[in-house]
Image 1 (cartoon, rainbow, N blue to C red):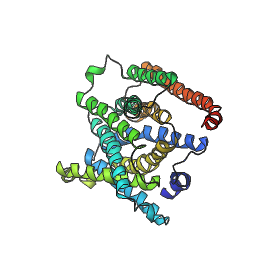
Image 2 (image 1 turned 90 degrees about the vertical axis):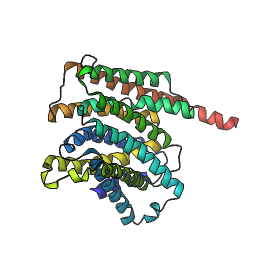
Image 3 (image 1 turned 30 degrees about the vertical axis):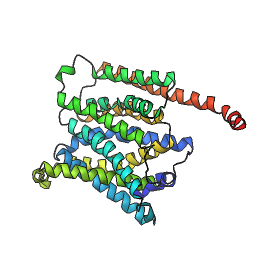
Length: 328
């Protein structure tokens, strides 16, 4: 499986330069579908595995497999990165995985997987706000409107009448998780990171996995794990999270952060909830109402607006570049 993934992503992951739009859409589509299904995987895994222990196993194993594959390809020098790059990758991994993904894992103990995905859909708002305040990056009016429309769709999907039935602990964790994820996503473009993105992803996963393990040991979670009592579906979900959720999905996301516009990358948070809600309804029998379908349409409309803003910006920039060079 790792070999197959590497044949697709590895040639592009090694260089942080712009590539064809086809590869961008392949990576974005992978994040859309794979990460949308991880909410279901997390919920199924929690049936027999404590939350921090789950995160430790998932990310340490996935990171170790990625690192082993990089070394097996004869690219062992990619793992031997400078201390500043290692610290940068460890910091980004902590924000994305321990803060972002860990918050979702904890939240799904208290709220449905679809609701957790909807809360995480606020990440693009935080990404835009952090990027604007910290680095002065501006969004077009249409891009901002797309973000607002998408968030309105999320609000419609959650629904105010049922909010009092949701556990406040789960909601609080799910509101903090996208802030951590957005912070790691934005700063990943401004801190030293390994040039080899697969190696960088491996370092991020192992670093975050180590922190998950420390928290798990502190809470004595391993003593509560009895392998023979873990349901088969929980083990299968764990395997899916390691291979697809971490190795495939996270590697595609790491490439996108380096090569695609941030507003475009952020659109995954609007598509993922749609996938998560549908899977939650089909597999976990979570409610799927007419309001949910209408909200999904609003979310998709927000995504279309953001992508349209990106295309317009590119078209406006093309004829300006020759004049700018002549003026310089």
